[in-house]
Image (cartoon, rainbow, N blue to C red):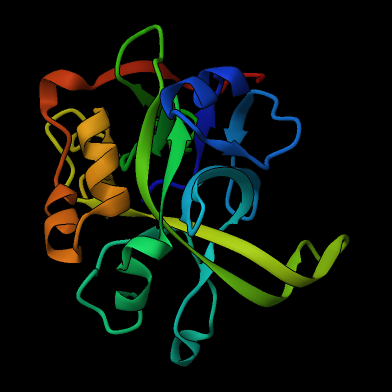
Length: 215
């Protein structure tokens, strides 16, 4: 379950990947650590084309389970999530690396070690297959609550590949790396788009850092 990722690329680099992209994100700075409920950029479909915009990470889940914010979506057959899998509710979540905590705690510290994954040591940009919705309510912390309308996003997970599985065997994010995949996720019918919910090929992913970092 991915609850930490980074996006260290420039705003202009994002804009350069998509012709005619409308930029509604304001000023975007590199984000070395994005946690649940954090605000980060996404690219979504609109009636006027693609838009770069900031959203808050975590879509409230079913009320029967308390309505807690869900950051990772696995069960795409759920009737709760199906409405968000239509093209108009899909988005691309830019990232340069993601973190999974080792399932086995360090024998000395008794803590789980963070392990960072990327496409290469240079950490080029990729996208998570995301969904988004508008929601009204209170988010943020108890000390700094934010009440009103929010744009919220989550992204899909799938089986862990052979690079991630030794660290976190349950799942990994759905990672999209090509323009063809980005287009399919944003535009294709649901059945076709969900074929992208599969592990990234092992050879395309590397461990690029381990352990706690000051940044």
